[in-house]
Image 1 (cartoon, rainbow, N blue to C red):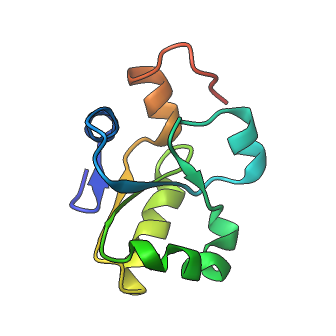
Image 2: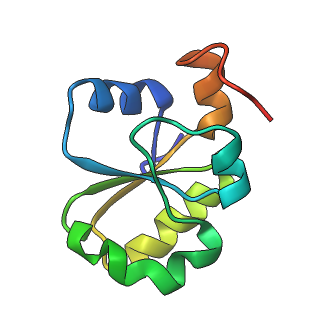
Length: 109
């Protein structure tokens, strides 16, 4: 794990303590429809460039991005940082890791 990543248990702790951050799901709509983490906002990676203005209010806030396994969310994290978003991290392992460690029994695909 690198400085651009946070592990699933770290994200769960932030959700549990109701920290103020934007939890971004960058998977596609069909993946989101299959299974989602409560509290996450869907902005598919394929639409992120067109929807960056929607994220501007969160530019100075913490943003945590997740996808299926962590690859796409890391790409989105790097891209958002290049757009001037200061505090962005990718959830390492994605929703698949979450389903194994945080919410056993959650649908996996």
